[in-house]
Image (tube, rainbow, N blue to C red; front, top):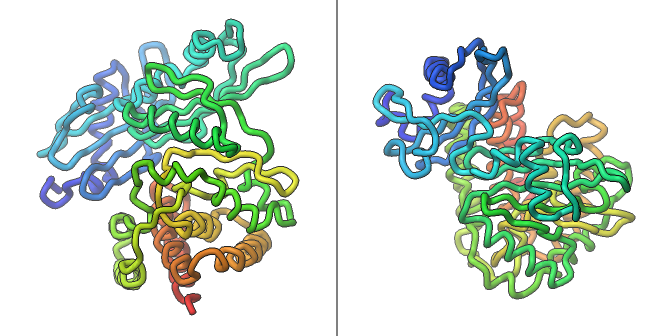
Length: 409
């Protein structure tokens, strides 16, 4: 399949034939590819597709597991692809790299290794003393190739372990992210302080207190009230509404539906029906000018004793509608994976309690339309992360979007 039929490279990067390219990429570095499997697929419809692969490589010094990344762009290799290795794949060019040498995240090379993290912490006087690499325990928390990475660093200290998060960003995201942290902290919001921002695009943040709402959801009692969550969002400073606007997740529902349909063509009619209803409902609604978080869900909120004590990932803070944020949380609650039936019932009860509160703050129909759109965006997750049984999981998520629209009165 050539560029004309597969302009963004989805079919190429997910085909068995990609193994030959992976072998060539490993050989370019002096190794021999022994095995590979797709680890994740990140598609930007109409622009590019990036895939990661878990590989077993035989190097001159011995065997090792490696994470290999490959990107295909519409129109061929360009820009920062030059910082990777360019290979020909049929009638197109693709860029390949071995983690952590991500061409758009130069700081990942240091942030992914204990020695590099010790150097970062020492250079920026984060602990007020030199840090030895042997004191650093690292864990990769999240990696979206060519977009961002987050690592947890636990540092042994005389007074007990100290935990920091290293957020590795693209160059154009650093200054806006720091600005948002400073703005929200100045307004009294419980966001972490940026203790250092390095020249190679790494932000160093201390761990927040409390527990994530994602964990507290399963405690068997309400971890915080819906009113507390709405109050947290309403406490965002008015100045945040003057920042550049990010496109709300719901506005990109067509792109996400296209990605889901590429993976499961049989869902196309249902996705089209969902898109049509969402578009008809949301098109008349103006963009909104409230200060919003932009990616508000249970993984971003830390709670303790019914209070919110922390708020993460403020990169998308800017103008929008309160329904954007509340719908994001509703959609994430509706698509939590891996629950037992009892846990699922508990989450559904909690979501219903919170929805009653949210319905009093925003238009209930708009809330459900936006939540359904965001559910469709989350339906890309099982395939993107190569979850076992991703086909059934994807269809179950689409059912959730349909149920949200059916609940509009």
